[in-house]
Amino acid sequence: MDIYIIIFITLIASLIVSASQILFKRGVSGKRFSPRNIIPTILRSRLMLIGALGYFISLVIYLYALKAAPLSVVYPIFASSFIFVTIFSAAFLGERLSKGRAAGILLIFLGILIIAVSY
Image (cartoon, rainbow, N blue to C red):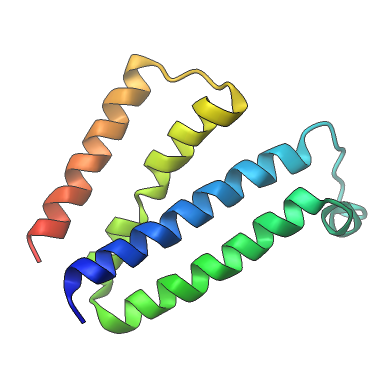
């Protein structure tokens, strides 16, 4: 399979897992967790259940990408989730995107780009 298709589907998996993180964050907001009630709390939260489904879908896509391409290519591309989570957090959770974080995103992006084109 063409490496660019693998990169694309890995990015899709990364987007899905990043969106799941936002759902998890919203799902835990204002809730108390303890070892005794964490599972019932998760099972009662629609956001957390959708987030878990997103994680599962992302895993299936990621495993498919791993089957088709080297881990040394797929895993760094999947690390783009760090970029997506930071951007989604600013957009959907109102978290601050400082200049330092923006610089970090740029460095991560450049690293991923170098790995992707060097294959």
